[in-house]
Length: 341
Image (cartoon, one colour):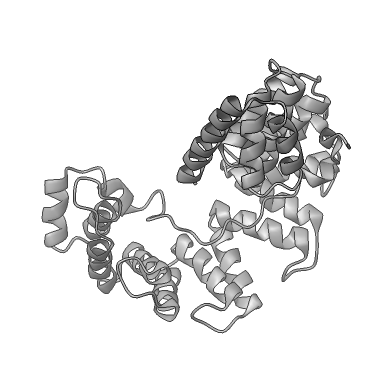
């Protein structure tokens, strides 16, 4: 049977995909975000008095159920009050309510209308989401040029998700001529703001020499920064580096298992498989067929194609009572992982 630890690294380092629409309730530095921390009684009074930032902030409280009974409908109602006053934060959040169908009937065309009103005032979250609306043809006719235009506007304001999105466009030649150097430039801008997916893709770029000279040390540096932010693929990649002694990192099975476990608990099926195999082989951990079965079973349930064969091999080494305990533990851990995603 082929050793799955010999899988080519090119299968490991698929770059992070696009992050999708912004689901943030507000731009981080928006007045509503600052208003959110005020005492709830004061916030309610200001909102009732017509302060749009307070109205948006109160909407956020209802959205999350922070200090009030959770209600998407109440959140949308407060966002609407602010939007009617021309507040771009309110307009964006009302658009997001229509886009997701939270608190209002889902209506992508109405979402686009409110996104556009906020975007024309330079609200970067709205510009970014409007780009996705044009990209996907939701609520508006699909138009790649318009998608790129709005992503560019958000990126030019320093909005990290849009900068990362432009990096993806240049890396893949989507809507623009393929240009690895330009892709890296946008990844760097987003990565320096702490955007984890951009940090991971920048690490991939340095590893493979795409758009920058190949540099193992820089690759590892950006992988570590992405992993510190919880980027699952970066965590798994560091495990792979340690397991194989790659990118200038000395081979260390104990350290590899530490990173495999972290990625496994975040739902990465290949990390779950590698963790199970580590227990099966006693690499980096004491040999334990029951624990091997647990993680191989979780990986198999999560869709890994290698895992069923190795899981069944581990099962054959266990007594029936131990196997039943392992099966119960696997179900419990899988449910816990699913609940966090």
